[in-house]
Amino acid sequence: MSIINIKDNLIEGVTFHSSPNFDSRPKDTDISLIVIHSISLPPGKYGGNEIKDFFLNELDTSNHEYFESIKNLKVSSHILIKRTGETLQFVPFNKRAWHAGISSYLGKENCNDYSIGIELEGTDDSEFTDEQYNSLKNLTSSLIRSYPNLSEDRLVGHSDIAPGRKSDPGIFFDWKRLIVDV
Image 1 (cartoon, rainbow, N blue to C red):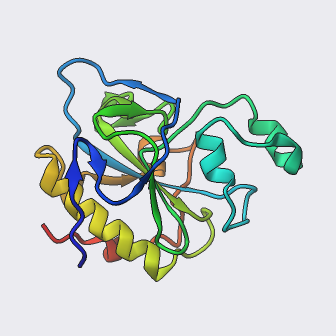
Image 2: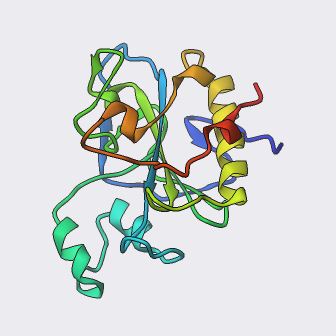
C-alpha cells in the first residue's frame, strides 16, 4: 500500500484543481463520514476532462446534448479517482464540497456538512477498475488516520445517504475491496 500524506487538508503530490463550488463547514463540525459516488460525463463515457471541467464550472455544454441538462448545476467533490487510478482533488477536506445534495445519515441531515465526497469515474451499473480500488483504499486509509472521527464503519455510498434519489456507487461496487489498513 502506498502512503498518502495529507497536509493542510490537501493530498500531497496530487494535482489540486480549485473548484468554486464549496463553502465553509458549519462551525464546530467534525469530518465524520466518507461518501463514495460514481460519475461519468457524458454518461457511460470515460477518459475525458468533462468531470474536471464540470466541477470547475468550465464544461463546454455544446460538446454533448446531455450537458445541456446539467449546465446550471454547481457541484463538486473533494476527490475524483479516474479509471486509471489517477486522483484529482477539487476541494480541501476542511471545506464543504457540494456532492451529497439532500441527504441524511443515521438521522443527521445535510451530509455535506460533515463528510468527504469521493467520486469514482464510472456508472451505477458497471464495474470499477483495480486501479480505482487501490487508489480508493489507500486514500480512505489515509483519511481515517488523519481525521479522528472517521472510521471504516463511516464509509457509505451516495445511495445510503439519499435512498430513492441516488443509486451510486451502484450494484457492482465491491465494498469488501475497501477494507482499510489503518
